[in-house]
Length: 391
Ligand SMILES: Nc1ncnc2c1ncn2[C@@H]1O[C@H](COP(=O)(O)OP(=O)(O)OP(=O)(O)O)[C@@H](O)[C@H]1O
Ligand SMILES: [Mg+2]
Image (cartoon, rainbow, N blue to C red):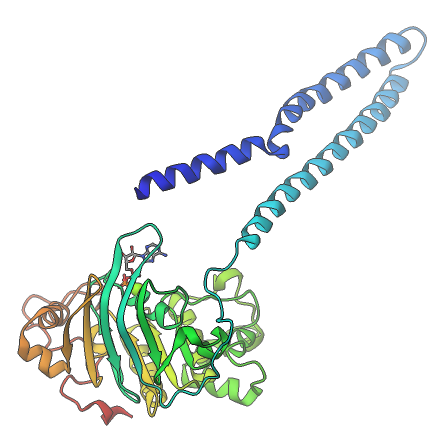
């Protein structure tokens, strides 16, 4: 069914392209290009025919040069017109996109945000991505106010989808999401998102300066505040190496930064935002273990007194949290502390054993054959360390 939808979309877009004015004029283009060569040849022949009798070669060359310059200019006019046409066609496509009405709407009579605390509750949540099977069916999950909860599980389990539902990027098909007892669909979207500092799995960067990229998390922040956030997220370390420091432009979508540098900018945004709920989706996954330990220190400080939901594949990132939730194919299959889950010897224990056995890609290099496997992955909080100890 998915395939059929995709095919019909491709066919529709092809039909529209073929119908467009721009494409229709391609035929004119194919005619005009050889014609301009033909006219020039004709011009040369005419010059020779008329000038052949008494005129010298110089006159013929001068006459032909004038002639070919004139046809060249006419041809360029045609090019300008074609460029204009192409831009218009592209603009029309974008306008169509903008005319698509948004599906997530503010309620007609929004409630004022008055959460009694910052606890999060997913109540019997049912949700399906457009055109796909439901991913959540009656999911219940609670993150008590002030708690730090780690969300782990296999790729495609629905972790990112869950974080996006909390931000109300999509509406539910059933159930409710509450923050501090308030249904998030009763709030204005701007009010809801003001409660949350979010670091997405793939943070978006704008082609502006490094400073602007951080500052946009809280318009009106002072330079000192921005600098402090950048320092806490270890952005300053690489920013100061750049030729223009914080004024360096980061390139379209941040192409001039490495993956780990982009993540640190995203973390600086979250720190600057200073919101009561912290939502991190693989926020430190692209950092090497050493930088992760440094950045995590800042994060643990940030989480103090806030409610945090933290998604991570690298289990050591979340092992020290108050509670871990294992999500698989949209269902909570296990939850408890790191110690509880190891003792239960279930899905989490299996994942932990995989990673602590020198999981390739986690620790770039395999453990030497004769050395015993390390007891735990390298970027720690110590697994048995109480959750608050690092703050
Ligand atoms: N925009 C979308 N449209 C349709 N299906 C989607 C969309 N986003 C995600 N999915 C599907 O929903 C499921 C859950 O995806 P999700 O991104 O939530 O997984 P995840 O647990 O975050 O995985 P990962 O650990 O790889 O980030 C996947 O099967 C995915 O294919
Ligand atoms: Mg994800």
